[in-house]
Length: 104
Image 1: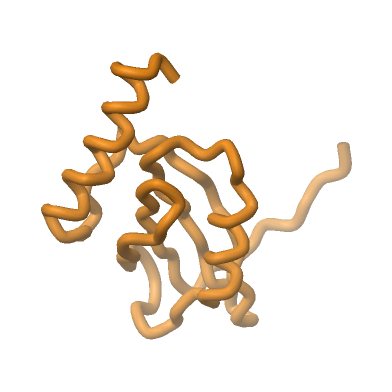
Image 2 (image 1 turned 90 degrees about the vertical axis):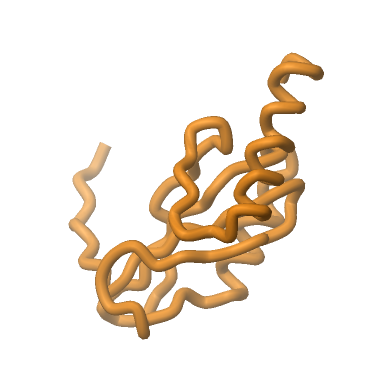
């Protein structure tokens, strides 16, 4: 495996997804005025066909303005990260329902 160069992020964001729909986004590091590209977020969310009912996608905006996927986190282990309480509760409940009632 070839070593990769480290990326430098100007800003980092968490995107909250419930049942395949982006429900919110919150800034958590770097410059809050360096926004990620919406089309990249839509493409990442849309590409995951077998995604859990609730999860978060972390993205970073590089110094040269590229939006890069950093990681994905399952909905059962997320903090609210600034998401509105009602939307956060719906995300948690969607994932809980999937885990407990459907055994996924």
